Amino acid sequence: PRYFALLPAAGVGARMAANGPKQYLTVGGKPMLRHAVDAFRASALVTHTYVVVSPDDGVIDSVLPSNLDGVTVLRVGGATRMDSVLNGLRALTGVLDQYDLVMVHDAARPGLTPALIAKLIDGVGDDPAGGLLAMPVVDTIKRSAPATDGSRTSAATVPRDGLWAAQTPQMFSYGLLLRALGSAPDANAITDDASAVEMLGHAPRLIEGHPRNLKVTLPADIRIAEMYLANKED
Ligand code: C5P
Image 1: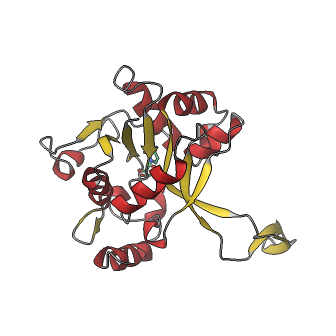
Image 2: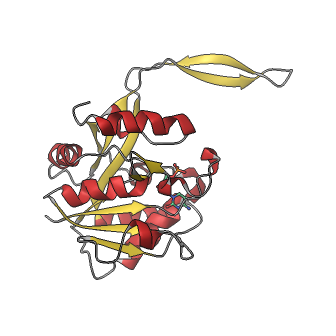
């Protein structure tokens, strides 16, 4: 099979409260998005990488020059992450076929490595349900409930056993992912691609990822990501 990467990078980074979209923040000397793209470019297993940005993006040309090997920018970003991925997939009609495997990866995860890409591909094998990198949950998880004074109480403890936190890349056949996202009920409720595939009744494989593949969400996450980027072994 052929393997492709699709990176949604059309977000505005509202939670980061920084200047500009977070995928363009500098981490370890280059824009976050560039780290993720370079991991796929460095993988011998990946045929081509597609990056979805918003139609009015004015920064992407400096981050990914048009002469960069193995990368194509699609200016078809949408209102939600799911829309951006779906628009990107639709833009590749006739370029990818049903059985091509697509790895969807968040531009906000700069710590991805070719070794993790290979681990995902190897772990999913020929499972038609696809799969994703994820980490077993280490915290004790609480179900919150509102208190009368407006604060929150811990109403219950959710058994941690069997809970995993999803990372990306998440890999599915082009045909399955297009069908799953195309039929998902509510774009805002879909925070990853695997959830849309699960709604079709499939059970994607969980492949253990790595802490270095964290999603940069809060300002302090940049320091953590830089620590991992400085040490390829961590
Ligand atoms: O905001 P969050 O961290 O969940 O975003 C995950 C990824 O989805 C980021 O790479 C972001 O750029 C992308 N995204 C997108 N289109 C949107 C919203 C988010 O491509 N409308």
